[in-house]
Length: 291
Image (cartoon, rainbow, N blue to C red; front, side, top):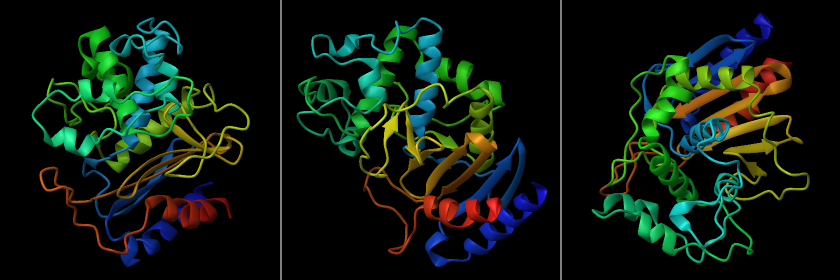
C-alpha cells in the first residue's frame, strides 16, 4: 500500500495547485496507521467548523458508555417536557419551530440557551440538520459533568496527544458544540486513525433507508455522514474541512482550509471559486490511493 500512499500524496499535491483549493492548508492520507501529508501547513491549527460536531459525537458516546447519559434515549433535561433526547440531537432528527441563528447568538452578549430551547419544535415532526442541536447537546453535557471541556480532553483529545487545542466558548464558558474547535490536519488524521481502531463509527450507523439530508446530501447519524451503504463515513465543515474514513481499508483522508472568517463582521477571505475539500478527497485522492 506504500505505492498507493505515495501516488495519493502526489495526486493531492498536484490538486492543491488548483485555485479552487488554494485555501486548503494540507491533505493527510493514512492507511493502516501509516500517514503521508501534502501541502504547506499540516501542523497549523484552524477552525474545523462542523467537524466539531463529530468530535462532540465521540465525546457524547463516551459519556453514554460512562453512564453520564442513561443511554441515547435519555431525555435532555435542559429541554424538559419537549421530548428532546440525546439521540434526536446527535442524529439531527430533532424538529425545530424556527432555526436559531448561531452566528448572531455567538456575536451577542447573552446566553444562547434560552433562544435555542424556545426554538424546539414538535417532537413527532420531521427533524433537520441544525447547529443548535449540537450546542444544546454540549450544554446538556456541561450541566451533567461540570466541565464539558474536561470531559472531551479526557475521552477524545488527550488520549491522542492533543493537549492544548483551542476551543472557543459561548457566553457561559461552554465550548460551542457546532464549531470552533481548532485542530491541525495531522491531529485530524490521528483522531480518524483512533476512531477506526476503536471500532467507531462501525458501532453506530444510520437506520436502513435513512434519508439523505442537506448540506452533504447523505444520511446523517451520530455526528457523521454515511455514504455507499455505510462503507464510507465523513465529517465535514464549511471552508474545506473534511475527514473521510473507509473502515474496510483502514483508510483515513483529511483536509482543512483557512477561511479568514471574522465573527464580528461575519465575513471571510475565501475566493468566489473555492471548492470543498470533499471534492479533492473523493475525486482525486481516494481514486489515486485505490488505483
